Image (cartoon, rainbow, N blue to C red):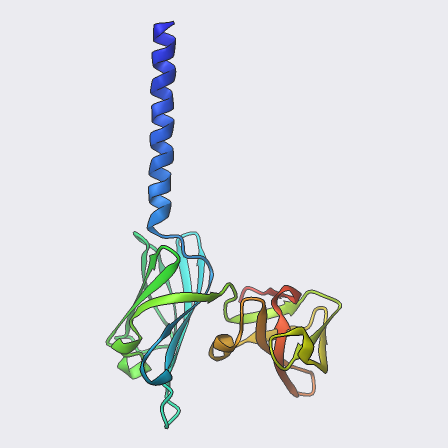
Length: 209
């Protein structure tokens, strides 16, 4: 009996140690897919649309300077997470621009180095807070009919609508206008006419690009 109890106790201790280790590991970083924002001086802000699949990361970044000349910054890149941190690589941006994203619990810490050409200065480095689960990109309508709204509420419904299967786009520069349950999206019909407005997030499904 003593040996059985001792073995059982040892196994229990091993199991408890394993659970504790897993909890500690998860606590280091658990930021989820979504869009994160950082406010900067003079009304500007930075936006990071963040998508993680396994240890692979994709991010689209937009900086609004709120300057008279309308200057903005942007970056699109991919990377591999190592110790909850990833250095992004881009085929579109300045090769010397180094973007590092680190997961810190439910936030993202960004560091921009030598990115002034892409208008991402040190001012936009720092901690970004999640504002919505949505990420920039294309979405498909998943309900029979989805109406556009002037503001993110049911009382501002417009006459314009899209049908199931239609594709709309959530642009990185308009995510700041979106809310957790409403997305500000654009739809272009076959004639090239564009319609924009808020649609309930639950009516849309994102398409991998």
